[in-house]
Amino acid sequence: MSEGAGADMTDAGHEPARPSLPAGDRVELSAARLQLLTEARRRIAIYQPALSDDVYGSPAELAELRRLATSGRGAEIRLILHAPADALREGHRLVALAQRLPSTVLVRMPQEELDLAYASAYLLTDQGGYLFQPDARRATGRASPADRAAQAPLLQHFNEVWERSARATAWQPLDL
Image 1 (cartoon, rainbow, N blue to C red):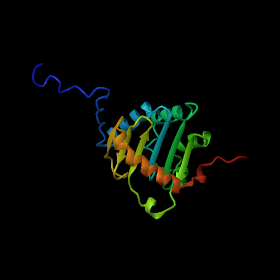
Image 2 (cartoon, rainbow, N blue to C red; image 1 turned 90 degrees about the vertical axis):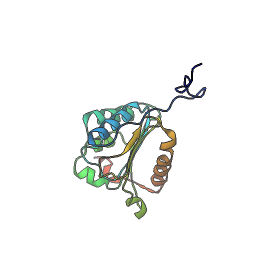
Image 3 (cartoon, rainbow, N blue to C red; image 1 turned 180 degrees about the vertical axis):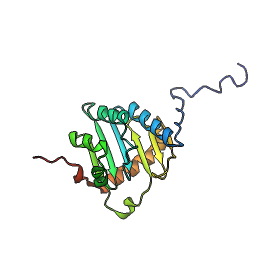
Image 4 (cartoon, one colour; image 1 turned 45 degrees about the horizontal axis):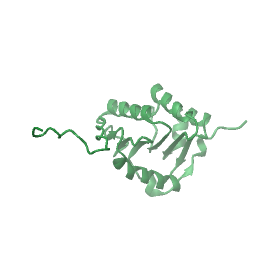
């Protein structure tokens, strides 16, 4: 065997690490978000301090969110927003989906000051994918389609905040 012949081989039984997704500007963030939504099978978790029209509002993103929400048993979209009433008032398109499918699109709002001061945003998928923006107001971040080790601390943070948060009653459909 020539020198370096096994350099590209991985340990038996282990898949090679999947490459990172570019996430350095708005276009790359949008593409990474859509790819992650497309690759998710049944469950995602979204932590988004504020919901602007360019985040989870495009027709392609909404189609993937709808696909996930209606994917059958085990389907779940968990969303943490600091100000869900703002998204409702501004008519964000995700609100209508959450109102039509309240059993699978679950929205909560943090109650503690520490949680409300958290400025980052992220998307986590059931496939180990993630998109993390250290500052949700800036169009830069890092992403991977499958990196459970990098996703784990974000998922732990999400679950902890989720447990301390209250249901976003502003998004509940009115039963008339």
